[in-house]
Structures are given as C-alpha cells and as structure tokens.
Length: 361
Ligand SMILES: Nc1nc2c(ncn2[C@@H]2O[C@H](COP(=O)(O)OP(=O)(O)OP(=O)(O)O)[C@@H](O)[C@H]2O)c(=O)[nH]1
Ligand SMILES: [Mg+2]
Image (cartoon, protein in one colour):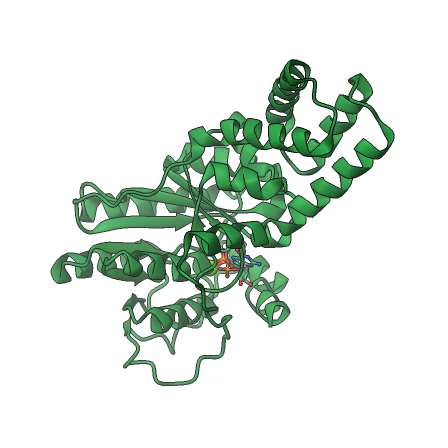
C-alpha cells in the first residue's frame, strides 16, 4: 500500500513533469476537477488510496510511545553503535572520536555534534561516567538542550482566517501533512478549509479531495492552472464563512528552480492582497530522509518566503533523526510538527525532551 502510494504520488515521471512547467507547457488535465469539492459533491470512488487512520489512545503515554515508535530506526542504529563502542573501549579520546562519527551518521550535523561532544566530555569527567546507560542519559539531556530553542507550537491568532501556506520540495509530504493537520485543528475545535494550490499535477487535487472527505472539510479547487487564484478564492470563501483556518497546498519545487521559487513568492503576495495579515504561517515541509540537504532547502525557502515553521516528515522511515539538531544549530527555525507515519494521526507536535528521549533508549 505504501509502495503503491509512493509510486503513484512520487512517480518520477510526474515529478519531472511537475518541476519543469516551463519545459512542458501543456495544461494539466483538470477537467474532472469541480470548482468546489465537498464530500457530497464527489461521490465517485477516489482513485488514490490513503492509509486508514489508526486508532490511537488519547493518553500522554501513547503520545510518547508514538514518537518512540516513529524514531525506532534512528534509536536502534544509535543504540547498536553505542553498544559496540562500549564493548571495545574505555571512555577516552578515541572513544569520543568514534562517538562523533556515530552522531554524524545519524545526521546530527557538524556544529551540533561538536557541541554535543564538548558537553558530554565535560559531564563524563564531572561524574566519572564509565557505563553505557549513564552516557546515554547524558547524551539525551545534552541533545534536549540543543533542541529546546526550536520547540515552538503553532499558535492560531485571532486574525481570522489564519492562513497556512504549505511549501516544500517534491514529495516531502506536504499534501499528507495537510490531511493530518486538518484533523489536528479540528480536534482543537477549529473550522478548516483547504485550498488545492498544487494546480500543476492533476492528481494533486484528487489526493487533497480524499483528505478533505476524510476530514469532512471543503476543498477549494479551480479549473484554471493558477495556484494564486485558487488560494485567493479559498481565503475569500473562508472570510465569508467565518472559517478559522485556511490550509493552502502548493506544488513541490526544488530550491534550484528559480522560476518556481519566484512563483511561490507571487502566491504569498496574492494572499496578502486578500487578507493583510496573511499568510500568518509559512510552513516548510522537510523529508527527514534528505538529511543535511534539508538545511539547504530551508535556507532557500526562507530567503524567498520567510519560513515561520517546519514540519519534519517520514521520521519513521529513517535513521537520520538527528537532522533536527543540525537545524537547531545551523538554521534555527521553529519546528511545529513531526511526521511519524502515513496515517491521519501520525503527526505530532514537536517536543524537544520527548524527541531526545526517543533517540536514545
Ligand atoms: N512513512 C511516512 N510516509 C509519509 C509521511 N508523510 C508523508 N508520507 C508519504 O510520502 C509520500 C508523499 O507524500 P505527499 O503528501 O504526496 O507529498 P507532497 O509533498 O505533497 O508531494 P508533491 O505534491 O508531489 O510535491 C506519500 O506516499 C505519503 O504517504 C510520514 O510522516 N511518514
Ligand atoms: Mg502534494
């Protein structure tokens, strides 16, 4: 199922077609797209399948467990390497050199690794640490300290509608995150409207419509291929209906595609014309598998748009969970959410301590 979706949505052909619109001027097939897609208006069977929401216990314990489960690959990788390290070595300079390599392989990044090693060395000396579990506890605490400055939950202010523009590179998980976010805000008692601003890929609107149906919210889409006008209409519609939040999807684009980066700055300007305080949040969705390249993506999107928050997706599928520490030290930006699976409930607010706990057992 995951493989099927991945192939369908991240189809290399589709990606190629989408990221080079100038080279492929033919219009996307949007004939089937209705002006407004509501659950009642789209009774036909969706072609795309999306993972069914998994039932989740609402306790704090289950919340922490979910993050732990999501970070299993990173934790297991770190744990195995740390255990091996302790098998052969006492804690000396060579030990710290090897620890440095282990942290770098988890994508903690050079700056954060240096800081971690410095702090760990200091504590190890102070407490005369010689065993693995104590070292892990020290690593946990030091990592949490690095992550705390980027822990910042998304606050919805009263300048309604609160417009969230979702941006990022192709296939990072933007549309899926919008589906999960809609549920998150509905659980907080907010009303949500979705704007299908990825007008480039024909299947994108359909994919978003399915998430709309699952959450029972309206998805505004358009027959024209101009994303600005779709989002403009959505913001106006939200104003008329007193909807609390508009979440706008956008097409994936690479930081190197200047014309597409220019296009997204235009989308932002159009939103502000419609609502002077909007967009209140420009959410960059990053795929944890991209490792250090996430920082390059962040810098480019930030220069073009002024990124106000991050979502780090697919942490469940990677051993590179350290990337958030790299972001904290190299390009500190508020991390709003983390994605730990494909299901509707697999989006969690980022909590530095829990995250650090989940990285080391
Ligand atoms: N395992 C896992 N998969 C995820 C997560 N978030 C998204 N995905 C999957 O990643 C794939 C791409 O997700 P999309 O939401 O379509 O990505 P996108 O950024 O909208 O892609 P484009 O619109 O093509 O740029 C899908 O198969 C999703 O199910 C996550 O947190 N964990
Ligand atoms: Mg998408």
